Amino acid sequence: MSLRRVVLVSATLFIFTIAAQRPGATFLLIPPSAKATAMAYAYTAICNDASTNYYNAAGLAFFKSPKITVDYCGYLNGLAPDMHYFYCGFTYPLATSAWGFDIMYYTPGTIELRNFEGVYLGSYRIWRLALKLNYSRRFSKKLSLGIGWKYIKQQYGLWDSWGWYGDETGSSWAFDFNLLYKILPNLSIGTVLHNIGPKIKYSDDPLPWTYRLGIAYKPVDTKNFSCAFSAEITKILIGMFAIEENSFWENFKYEWDTAWKGIGIELLFYKVVSLRGGYFYDEEGARKGLTFGGGIKLVNFELDIGIDENIFEFETQDRKISLSYTF
Image (cartoon, rainbow, N blue to C red; front, side, top):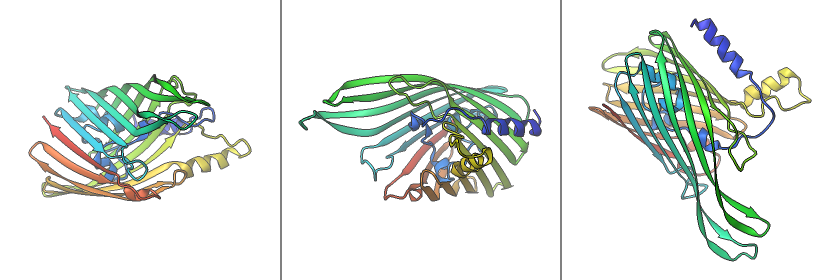
């Protein structure tokens, strides 16, 4: 597939629109990986650890060895001290293809249950879960494609005017479509269309159909030092072009302005110690600021930390820790 066709496909996906709604199952948008977090989530075109299962499964076909990444974060503790996020990804490469699997678990914490008179009934923990299986195939030294199928499950607390009366779980499924194109050995472009599936039971909100386009460039790559830059744009496709009184171009400008944007840099010294930084901008979500982190690699183990708490308007701690192993 030529670069021209890649760009045309990306442009077509980007202007794809569906009915004006707000997305549900937004936990699917919480990005894993301390590496990616430190680089403002601009990771779709990088693909060098098992969180590639989440960002762009097409990159799995370029792996040479099996990898596993485990990720944990006490998520946005400034909002709730018992919010937690866990991610684990695994990939197993073959000759020209690869399989991958990941699991994502998120809980916003426990809530107190009270009836309509305010009488305490106990506590209740809400949770969200997503399991995904990926397959990626390399068609040339430059191009790979990937597809993923995920199972999504959410637990709900049910309320009416009389108070809490029980809980239910709703489930759904979705497909992810992924592409990675290496324009040059040190320059790559990645594009994905994620979470394409029906709404979850007990919810009128659709899944967060998501499009991402990223580029990565590594100008220096030696034994003692390497440097990589990345940039990315993310757009939630739900509710696009919904302002009827606006012209097409006014709506297009609005959608561009409200897309999430990130740039990142990684400095790697002696293939052991890494420093990372980035800048993230989300106008509509009022998230903007610097991200940073670093890591260390010892033999086949990698330990990384990514900090993005500065992008939020409220005080919080949001520090992801990732442990990776290459078999």
